[in-house]
Image (cartoon, rainbow, N blue to C red; front, side, top):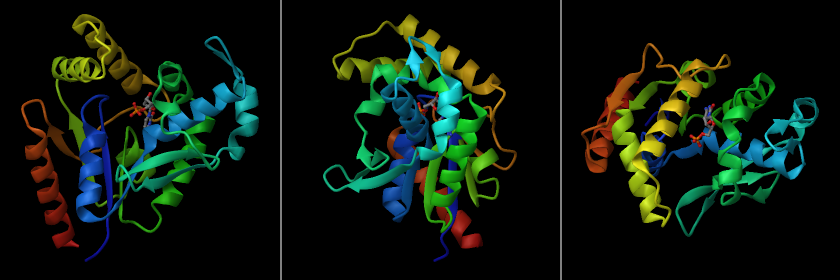
Length: 230
Ligand code: DC
């Protein structure tokens, strides 16, 4: 069967990475989390002392950007890929608050985006990938055979995030989380470099009222329809 490229973009906390990972596993494709790459660059900047508080030494980061290599390796225990920064596993570190609070700043920098997009295109050269992010169907793989734009209402996404945090033992107020969801949407969609935007040829998946199982089934159906047309 022909191998294709699947681009999944969408709002934060829309559940797109869970969907993308499950789909990749189901069809035997490689899953690539492009957000993890921007997180790894942020961790690199922190490790090199390029942040003083919230201020970033952009010039230094630009000089060092070609030294940053991100890769993914499947973790046999979790069955999911872990992120590596210059050969070192950083999966846990990139999910912490220090990185989370600074990553949107890093993701607005043109030289960072160009470097990451080049690495993403290289990873997808042989097709058979499911990549998720904000600009995959618009910038990274404009020719992807299947593009999906995932969304859900801000209120539903905020509630899901509150539930997730609660399950992790980190209770948070719904009002605060909703504000954070709305502000991240605003930053992601209005930034100058590669804003979050639905590709003209993307299929929209609004999962506000769908279960995870229903989404999985729909995605698989879209994938099958698309490969059958190849
Ligand atoms: O999906 P995430 O929360 O792990 O993404 C981390 C950050 O990177 C977030 O600020 C959005 C940004 N991002 C991006 O600008 N482009 C991508 N392709 C993926 C993520």
